[in-house]
Length: 494
Image 1 (cartoon, rainbow, N blue to C red):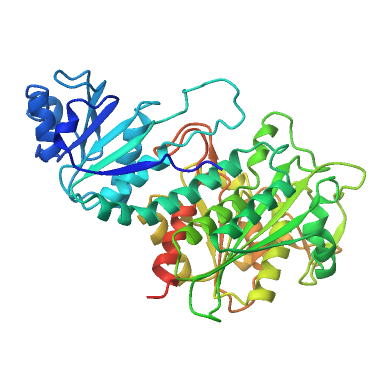
Image 2 (image 1 turned 180 degrees about the vertical axis):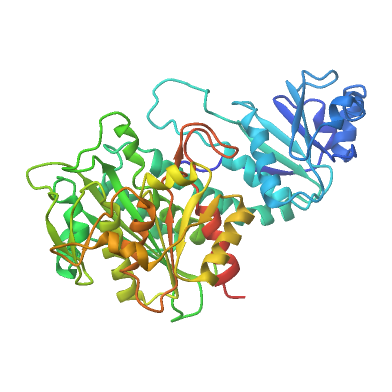
């Protein structure tokens, strides 16, 4: 898997600035205050930094902005990047600033020279690591178009302390990158078997990982899950990942992810145009996997279980048909109206299994579930549905603090009538109106009374056509940072 670009932490050496090649970064405040490294760079380039901060151009500069002096006189560097960063910068601003540094570096090495101990230095480093990502596993020729940043060195007055502070943030960055890798992989590579194998490798990090095969899923009664994959030669699987870092016997938080490795729509076949994007329909499972990796790497003091339903939705002579009726693990029957509404069939069985086995203190499911959520919220926010105001409020706060867009959507009994079936307990779709809401209402029927629950519809945020502040175009890794923050703030023991 792709890991963050290795970052070297070194003692601040002002004399090294003159002979360093590649790109050198120094920081100034929006008020024009230069730290020790910026003052040294200013002397080397004959006052160019000072002239910049005294110019009319700098009056318009905002915190987080990067201004480049190309081929600065008196220095071997190809560029001197002036990072404008307020001492009061928050996490989101500092992370984006770090990402901006590597985004403009292409494949050049970067030296970040911090002449003072900025409060957000570790987050700045995390941003650099996040934006250094490029998915090029299947390219056979050199292509730097998506790459951002070569080798990264951070000089700091107290490098060991900064390295310690940055370590858990870089662990989270590695979880984000794992999610991006999984979502970006083509379906002929990331089969359900390959997906399960990659998750099994995380046993090396201290996770307990189990893979439930089709025979066991049949015995458990997961017929809605199995019905989605019965038209594919690829076997359906459920992977259970346990991180036990909290108090012994304390109920875990359960994270449940939809892992449809490719979605043709089944018999309700999707249009051909754009179907290649359905390699990302396992985005919910990807976020769960990345979050579990992050928690294990940073040794989170919490009990968390991640469960993912891995399946491929294909049309064939054995595929589920519109009009079929299947029984869930819970015992409820579902009339399949549209086989392209398959994600809720995957989730409902895995959610029920999670509650039956682990009796979690809370449950959060994630899925690229509906196109309707994109119509409603675009690509800026995930849809958030919940039966518990406290848990939902804590998640929304965590998402805001981490800069990951999330917006709460309504639930209500009035929507249930849209799921009423003539021949079964419910239909799997409720029509075009309120499509994302009726999908959430369907899932809520599989939440036990007393279980705090959040449903995250991430169809609009899991993968995007244009690059973001933190990632190139393609998979974003949305959700790993917010979920990690939620675990840290709400569920970790002191």
